[in-house]
Image (cartoon, rainbow, N blue to C red; front, side, top):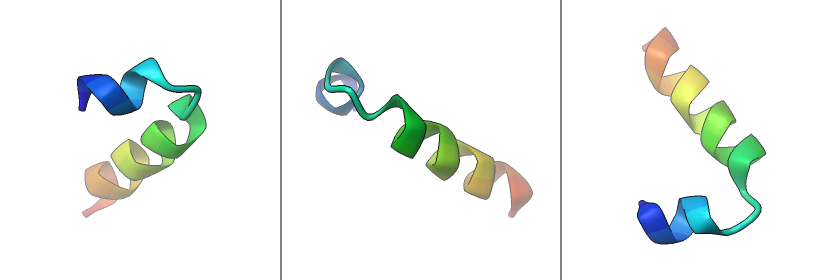
Length: 23
């Protein structure tokens, strides 16, 4: 996940996190 976070994909990560939180 560190590699993904390193890239400018914070929005995608936030969306994924929000989706997982909803579940």
